[in-house]
Image 1: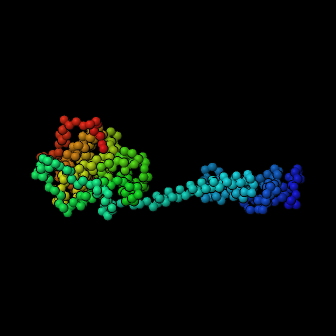
Image 2: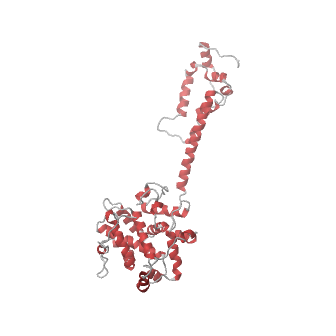
Image 3: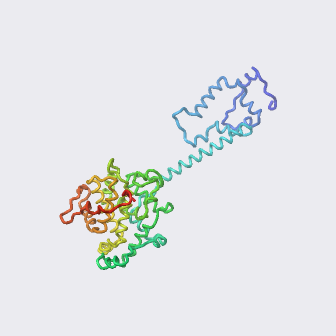
Length: 401
């Protein structure tokens, strides 16, 4: 009878063995009908023996595969035992199990969503951005706040202003002053995580230098491998802003200078001659900006009727000269401060000579040039060893910015 108490002993054991055993996967009323239903489903301790025990073991092996065989997360939600435990919600102990199961299931679903989101992000990674596309963005972007901070030229007073007016380089032509202001405004623009173009520039630089097809996280130790000082490249763009990244983007995206960029990056990871590549790049951009503000590049800009292109070429030429001197004179990081001062002097006083060296390198090509030891022509020699005045006293140790 449905309401009768099930007797104990051998008779009950016999009845439990003969009675059909309900499967846990099916939603039988006895399985959810209170304490009596639980007793009917279990049938006492004796019901665990015999042929039913063998079938249960086979079911357990199906539900729980041996170690080494993984099952997808979605398959765990279809586990029959877990579903049966959920259907035991009518009991107090079953309520606790169901609550734990619900929480575990929510955690598994969260893990599954994170995995799918991660792979979705990698699959839909933005393509590399070209220099021209990035430049068009800055040409149309609102840089009004950055333009307010721009100081186009160095302010001179008194005799220095008179000497510069009489004997200094020519002034930049009016039609080129807007392009100069754009370059200086980019130098005042910081790296913004919310600007997609900024992030694409950063990712493109990483992919080109490392020759990787995959992107990288916004923050992390991988940026130190590229030569930044920490996990956030944005903190190292002092004084150069996005112009520092734009010039590095030009360096790695131009087919004629990309081999040079790879060679310099390789030297920066040398066992004894290593140096922070991206920090060195930022320092060279700083030199270029200073040469522009002191009107040292006005003659070349007026001749070519371009400003940003001249800045990029001077940047690449200065990096080329730095590479040659660093490699063949066996420079180390201890020499970086003095070498940058010499390079700054050449960029301001002999920019045309630097640009000619880049032009010669590009015309010969990386294979023909081989980045050999420079041998300038007589009368056109760059004596870097005598540029820095030995009487100049530096405050502390000469270091990179």
